[in-house]
Image (cartoon, rainbow, N blue to C red; front, side, top):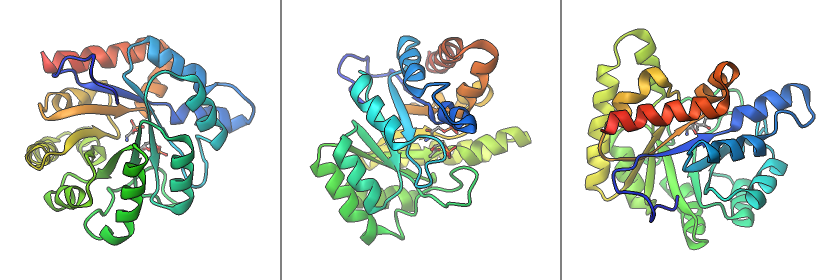
Length: 250
Ligand SMILES: CC(=O)[C@@H](O)[C@H](O)COP(=O)(O)O
Ligand SMILES: NCC(=O)COP(=O)(O)O
């Protein structure tokens, strides 16, 4: 995302609007509209919009990507599987950033991180093609040293640390080990020269300790915000998340 106007310690908030599309798709039709959500997110202080164009198009569609690409000012972070189809779409729309994520058709949500270490040869041409097109590439990985090292070898400038296991551990009552993994990975990633992002499963309750990790430059948050919007509205949900992130950094 474009950062020049932001103070260095500003932790960017990318708002993931996938699940606005999930609700729309439950009935078909046009409501609720992801573009309207993106515009509200911008007004509420989001630094970027994240969308995951899944291979099965269960939420965001190609038409959503086209509409959002043409209409919003905020940088778009396109989450995508490492496939030829998705690469062609990314090269067509040229989002600000592309985050390569693992996908399994049967999964309810993204379960693990990308195996950047084991899939070096298949990922390399995709990372290179995206980079050559001027798209900022990020790899969605587990907070493991070997994955960070693999991302650096691949020439990805950014990694997004998968916070799903941390979020689950938090719900189970003790997230200290998972938080320590995230902290170690953030330090290691920064030492490798990577820009560090994090996301998945973050909520008001669990965002603070993650936001406080000083190496992180961006959090991507979606499912909780869309759910909370049912109760307080999207604007208020995003503003409260922003407040909690800022409080963790103060
Ligand atoms: C990679 C990731 O964490 C996001 O894509 C998020 O999970 C929303 O998409 P799903 O709910 O379809 O996994
Ligand atoms: N990459 C993580 C993301 O975009 C949002 O994940 P979630 O908050 O929807 O779980």
